Image 1 (cartoon, rainbow, N blue to C red):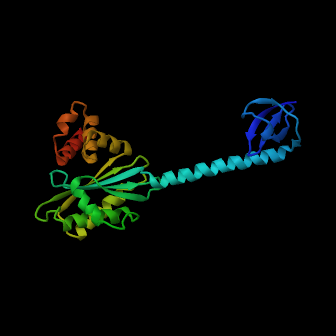
Image 2 (spheres, rainbow, N blue to C red):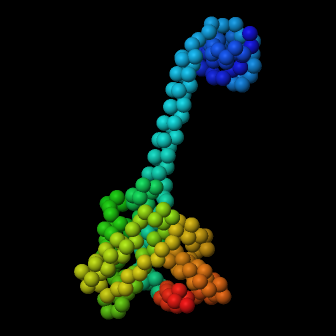
Amino acid sequence: MKGIVIEELKYKLIILTEKGDFIEIDKLNTRAKIGQEINIKSKKISTKKALRRFALAATAILIFFIINSLIYGMIFTREYVVVDINPNNNKNVAMEIHYNYFGNIIKLQAANKKGVSIVKKMRNLKFKATNVVINNFIRTAQNDKFIDSGKQNTIVITIASSSKSINDESIDSSLEHYIKENKINARPMIVLGNDIDYKKSKQVGIPIDKFILINKVIKNNPSYKFYDLNKKSIDELINIANQEENY
């Protein structure tokens, strides 16, 4: 009788015979690969037993993929929030907040050299709420004299999210409340983009808030050139973007 090898166990081979039966044979006496047709003489096993083995194998594979998906979702970044204080001058300080696939903060990272010292002082905040992390960053930057109380400062929050799970209105409201409550002379701004914008801004070496605003202006008016817009400040780009939207 002939059959096809469909599963390889430690000491046995499971065969599907030409009659549609499942049988097992001694692996030590037969050299065959899965999918190979062989001649067999052995004891028949029940279809139920064979299907049970397949179900267990399928379950193990499913569990493996679920566990790997959960691990991937927890440790890899999906979305970003970038806080940039006074981006219009060379004394700006910036930080990135990284979120996993479940919307939890998994990493705080400096977005420029001056941000390194600030982020180092922000301990035990990785799993806190976004507004808590942002407020702490602003407070630390203020203590380190990156915010000038004698003039108006600019705080830009860039949200790079494709899933739209990060609530920009909540962040904006919390930021305005914190600035007012602590009597900080600053103008808050929210810039919306996605994770693709974040990756592209890294490739060209331009801060993400500026990268998004430049592309927003060009989208509204293609006559503008990327190179020329890159020479302008954040405030200038916001004004141009608002003007183009009103036309």
